[in-house]
Structures are given as structure tokens and as C-alpha cells.
Image 1 (cartoon, rainbow over the protein chains, first blue to last red):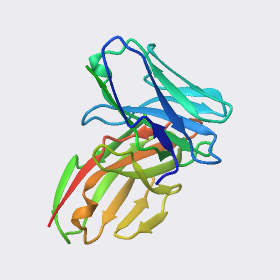
Image 2 (cartoon, rainbow over the protein chains, first blue to last red; image 1 turned 60 degrees about the vertical axis):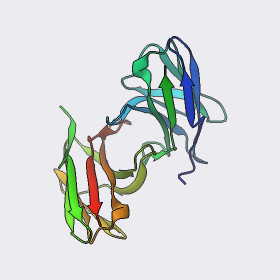
Image 3 (cartoon, chains in turn yellow, green; image 1 turned 135 degrees about the horizontal axis):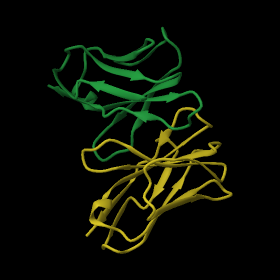
Image 4 (cartoon, each protein chain N blue to C red; image 1 turned 30 degrees about the horizontal axis):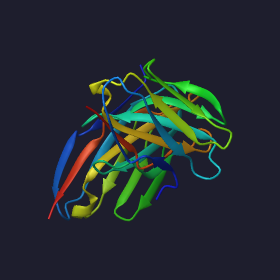
Length: 111
Length: 110
């Protein structure tokens, strides 16, 4: 158990819908990272927050957004969902710039 | 261009047959190299962080080493439960993002 929690574990929705994924980092970690992993693909970095502020952006679509709240939990919002958005979404946390610890992931299925 | 390359893409071994996985990198300045293990449908599990050339770390049947251009993950006398995809990632100076390799899928046959 890495100490990073993600909810929900599974999410099934329809095209065009909007969903919110939630992540709680390890105690003491200020950085949160979001990744997407499509079937049999590598990890694609989406975005990083540090203590509530956006720090780095990767290959994140404009339809996707994220935020980190004062209690340091983070949410990833995915809107106007397409079939191709079906994937595993992972959250990771770290002390700034150090080893990232990953959560169990949310499996999103868009029908 | 900064990049991380892992080889081989897949490796099948018999139980007890030792081998090594490779992670080569080209970055302007290495801040850290990270090894993870990922089981299907699960989040990557942290294994090792290496910071400087010559550094070595061990955990059970796994040993990670680092040079200025590459890292090796040595697996000694593997067991079927060591079957997984092993991921390598690199952090370079002045960049909080990790650069990820595509992974090596390791299959250990009993």
C-alpha cells in the first residue's frame, strides 16, 4: 500500500459526459501528479500540482482539467468524453521532486 | 532530445534463470533514476531510486545499478511472482517531470 488513495476504482460512462476522479496523496506529500495509461500503452504524464499550484503540464487535453485543494487532495475533471479517453488514470504523490508513489488507479470506460 | 529507452521490450525466462534489464537515457543532467514494477491493471510500485553513477541498490532478488548513460536491473534466480512490467524513469535537472521508458515485460515460467 503506497498510501495514495484514488476513487472511484471503476467508472463507466457514455460519450459526451463529464466525470471527476479524486486523489488523496500520502501524508506529508505536497506534489500530486496525474497520468493516463491506455491499454498496453506507457504512462502519459498529464499534469502536476504542488501545494495547490499548477507546476507542470504534459499531454493534457483542453477537455481535461485538474485542481489541488487546500487539504492537498486533487481532482481530475474529464469532460466531453470520447471513446478514446477510456484508460487507467493514475495519481502519484511525492515530496517535491523526489520519488513518486502511485495510487491504485481509476479505470474509466467510455461507452 | 531527452529520452529513456528500455530493452528488451519483453523477456521470457525460466524460473531460476538470472538476467538483466536495461534502461539507457540521454538527459542534460541526471537528478534521479527510478525503477518501478507494474502488474496488469495496477499502479506502478516503487522499487529503487538511484542518484549518481556507481550507486547500487538491492531488494530481495533485484539489484539496480547506475552508470552515466544507463541503468541495469539485475534479477537473480527469479520466481514466477516476479513476472511484471518493469518501468524506468528519469528526472533531469530543472524539471519536475519524469521521462518514462516504455517498460520491459518480464515473464518467468515455472
